[in-house]
Image (cartoon, rainbow, N blue to C red; front, side, top):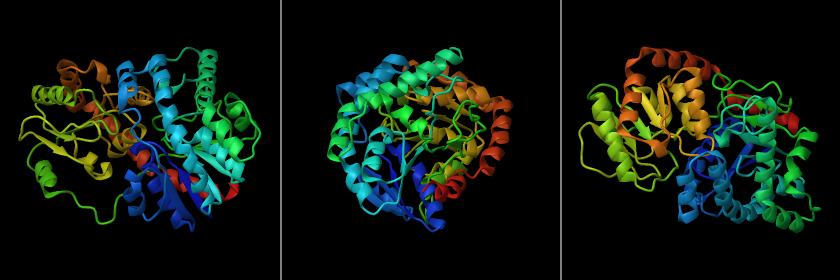
Length: 417
């Protein structure tokens, strides 16, 4: 088949589908990924076709609204601001879904950002589709919505909050949905009713995370499959910079620090806290500059700043990981068998940070807006000196490595057309 992945968003919204795409290609399918221009080389480097989606993939990192989103953190207020930030981005990028799907496509996989308007386009063009989500989306009584960062409030309230969050998410893209459906000759439907329609028709969805960190919920429909993680492709011929290899070899295992695709209002201040925390804990560090811009400060022979490096190679060399707890980075830490200290910022990151604590591979999270030298140094000391976290991480590593998430999607796909 000719399979298209609609993957608007930032790095974590694109990277998992490169490895998944490679597995589908090995099964004889032609695979294309539609994403922002900055991810062209990531897609083509994996041997997959690239299709362009315009729009700014950093909507939460720029402008006053984005800064207020970060300042608001998690919870209902942060969730409301996140929806407002994403609204304009989805409005601009969804127009490109139509030519992307029309360019020779038999089946479409929709990432979380593409869910609502992407489904409209697939319906209008008569192309079958399925969800492909790295974090849980389906309502459940077991937990409230991952993006709200709330504790469990009981099965009835949890499930009600999940449904409200899904309806609100769909409704926020109502303007875009109405325009797309009109252009494609589809009747108008209330966006808030979309999820109910999908459930009624048993629309298939794949959840790309490990049951070792989040078991499948018993009240999910049979059409929702937890497959295991989809790992990003590693570029052919990749080799570490000699400077990085020398730093790793020249002392005790360092600590990785990175915030992925998140930005910071004051990266120099955050980097200063990281440096002092590592010093107090007696640890070396590798800091990934990323979109956060963690590349300033004074030269330090105990801290190395790096750019993009495959987590698959880097993480097993680390004593511990400090990161934002995006779904992909969280999974990479589990695969490496390394303890983690979460610095969650927003969206589903507090959820994954709490899961790492729950399964025993993290001594606790330090929400980024509450970051301090004392809290981070104490957490790092526990993560690196209390052997329980390393032993538990290595136990889960064996489980995660044995899973074949991409293979399960490849096996199921032919039956969905």
